[in-house]
Length: 307
Image 1 (tube, rainbow, N blue to C red):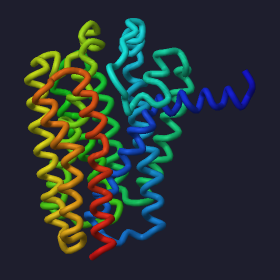
Image 2 (cartoon, one colour):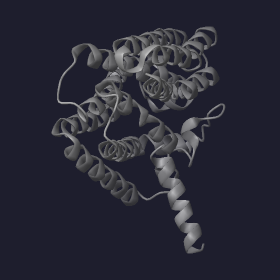
Image 3 (tube, rainbow, N blue to C red):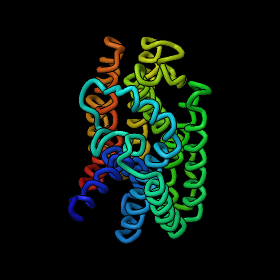
């Protein structure tokens, strides 16, 4: 294998290790928080925030696979495959468990990205750094509870909400209970209902033999689908409420585009899950819901351009 080919293979493995597609889409979450703090973020500060955020999400998703390497190896041995296109599949799922990436290389990748993210967070605001550390600890706890309780999904919701709120504190030292509260509610509901439960529903056949406890495994697919749909409705409502709270900055355009983007990324997936609480539908819902924060970010950006 030539050097350029070897580098390309390792780069692809690292991208899959960090779930690159999902990590890059996730940058929208704290950026929405930033736009709630200010509708005119300073370009230099915004660049630092984007870099720190990208490094943080790439590190967090990779750390998930690092912590879960033992379980993932057992899963890989069962050769289960997902039914349908998977937004997380770019670069290959679980390259560490598949033997395409060495553990030492994965650990070095996570430490490098974590260092870059923490340095950026400190430069922006020490509060951001503290929130980053809290999110990392919650991620570790979430992975440790894989076979212990299905309610670890609550930690996932809190972790994502913390990450989005870090975007606010990157541009503001003040606390706005209404906007921060709606932001946290929106992110937690979206994470649990749009990503966590649908992802677990899609992985039921893979997770059950491993003793992993998830909402679909413990309470059944139909109950899990109902909960996910209800939380997606909460997320859509909270996103619209955020647009109303930020009306002076983003106006009618911000609200209208937020509502419109919620239809394909939250409301439609919720309706389909209620009708068909199966793995294929859950995976499609997961893929669509992953774009919901991006849609809200586009809505606020469009609103700022008009107001």
